[in-house]
Amino acid sequence: MAITAETSDKPGSLWSRRPQFLTTSLLIYAALVFWAFVSLFPIYWTITTSFKTAVNVTQGHLIPFVDFTPDWRGWRSLGLSPDTILAPSTVRDEFLRRFFNSIVASAGASFLAVLIGSLAAYGLSRFSYKFLWMANKDISFFFLSQLILPPVVLAMPFLVLYKNLLLLDTLIGLILVYTLMVLPIVIWIMRDQFDTIPVELEQAALVDGCSIWGAYLRIVLPIALPGMVAAFILSVILCWNEYFFAALLTSSNAKTLPVMVASQTGSQGINWWSMAAIATAAIMPLVLVGIFLERYIVKGLTAGAVK
Image 1 (cartoon, one colour):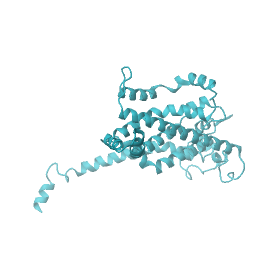
Image 2 (spheres, rainbow, N blue to C red):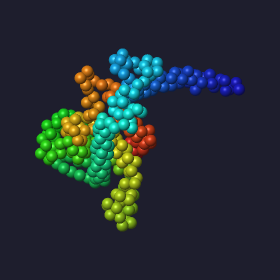
Image 3 (tube, rainbow, N blue to C red):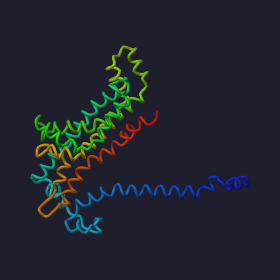
Image 4 (cartoon, rainbow, N blue to C red):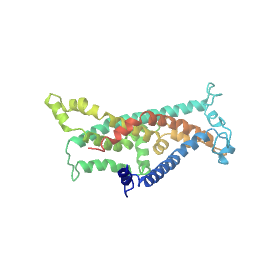
């Protein structure tokens, strides 16, 4: 017992460092709690604002049933309140059309980007290319550098091109531009995925009689599936939240939810309750994706971190 006591009292022992360890842990958890509050407060504000009236919005009331009594005004303006959900509503029909457009544009562009990007990433991972002074790493960086270009620079070229190709205000046009927008990210994620897969697996498949396409489809693709799922989900999120091209290249038929959110203005100013209700309905699918598919996102994005 005496030996144990002497050991525990030695400088640098775990017992003597316990107060410092607890202080460090408390500071870390306090910082995490503060950052979680900062990150989640905009979502909380948006949801509560959808249940406020004009007076509650202007006076900055935050806590339901304490600062204000929740009201269905924001959801009633969309025809989504309990007393209007069963009645015909042109506003609700418009909201559902914009919701459907967002789903089609986001999912279609993400699927096309993953399909094209996975093939490009596989080529950059398995084969050596030389174009002028650019090798594989330079080509990969060239794809990523496209994200540096501000979207407003492409406004006039896309308007002229889409007008001549009759793609203005069409979902096909929106899918194509969204595909170009997320394709560099997909290529980088999938290239890291393919780099972690041993080449010997494909060589063994080729020895057994598989073609290159057969080895890719039967061996490589199932292993890289978590990365493809993560790239697809990330692409959907980016496309779902995109506003600039949706506002620029659409007018009535192909408008998406972000454009509808930004258009909630009236003769007396901004309809904050309607805007908050639409924004709440728009972020719910992304919240569900984050909750139920979190493990696929984390697994896919971290698969190339350890080699």
